[in-house]
Amino acid sequence: MRYFQEELNELQRRLLEMGGLVESAVHRSVVSLVERNEAEAEAVLRNEARINQMEIEIDDFAVTLLARYQPMATDLRFLTAAIKINHALERIGDLAVNVVKRALRLIREPPVKALIDIPRMAALAETMVRGSLDAFVKRDSALARQVLLSDDAVDDLLDAIQDELARFMQQDPATVSRALVLLLAARNLERIADHATNIAEDVIFLVQGVDVRHHAEPPS
Amino acid sequence: MRYFQEELNELQRRLLEMGGLVESAVHRSVVSLVERNEAEAEAVLRNEARINQMEIEIDDFAVTLLARYQPMATDLRFLTAAIKINHALERIGDLAVNVVKRALRLIREPPVKALIDIPRMAALAETMVRGSLDAFVKRDSALARQVLLSDDAVDDLLDAIQDELARFMQQDPATVSRALVLLLAARNLERIADHATNIAEDVIFLVQGVDVRHHAEPPS
Image 1 (spheres, rainbow over the protein chains, first blue to last red):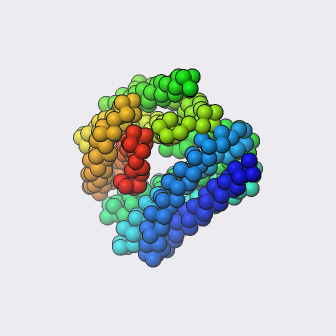
Image 2 (cartoon, rainbow over the protein chains, first blue to last red):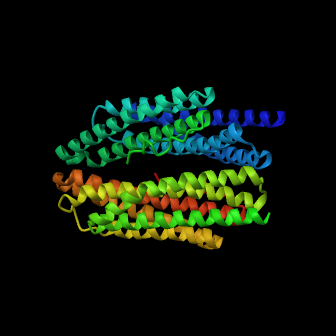
Image 3 (cartoon, rainbow over the protein chains, first blue to last red):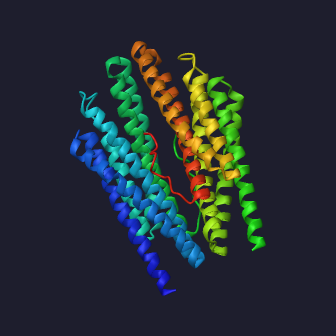
């Protein structure tokens, strides 16, 4: 079984490499949106294919280990968590690409407003992604639970952002199309936070064997 | 191995039961939105917990089979497809709940406009969910590929819906908040179609052993 342990370590190493790429994509997507930075946006688009490729490789690797070693208890939980976290990371990468596409549209036009709540929500989403991966590496369920708590703050910020953008649209119809793009970018960030929450739930299940799914439903 | 085959049949049976519940939730969510039908909306909310519970049970069952029987080739592909399809179905159920919550908000207010493209897109999304499950049952990759083709039509409809709602908001600021809710409901339907596309991709992989993920990226 020593060989199996090495394979599990290799799987975790690859997952963290993917996590690093995805974290960087999220960070750059936020910079591209908030600072109207086209170079950072292009960097995210360039890395998309690599993240997608890694997801397929990690998925294949994890499923192969599952079938080959028929693990029990902790190792089984680790493998199923790895498969889920891998998928969540790929979705986060996809959402960062969506943010970037929206940022590129907005860069070409005058700003709707000074962004305040969006950078705040983006920072929170980034912290949640990093926190959920840290919790996974350290098998730290207390840290994972902190990530779950942040999700409510993200939801409140999204509500505030939506209300404010709706007011802009009502007061100045010329802002409607830009405000809509901004709103959708904000929703992408909220979904990134959602996936970080899912990763944190997977970590809690991994560490404690307790299923916390569906106790805190993702916001609409 | 006869017992293993029976377990696989049982897994498929449960997955199809879940598929039936989710299809019904999608259908009812569309009726609640398009016909402003509160009773159908409430029915979807009542079934949510059951769908969530089924997801957990099916996931546990599939992972246990994977670990216990260390299957190869087709059976391995079936189990991994089942795990992914199960998850996609649960996400579709969640999105139907989101549609319903938005429908309930809209029912309390005067209609923004006569709905034309939204029912069309909803019908397409429903057909895709049903088609992807049919393709799974029949192991029919041609049918699965038809589902993939519909995804472009859904994207075009979503673009048309967004443009039209933006025009409404520009012309009559009093419609902004309702039009936004309608827009988000339409986006939920588009994501339902997206998940049906993912299921169809899983079916193609199951039948042909060909990975078609990331060849047609989900729309933003």
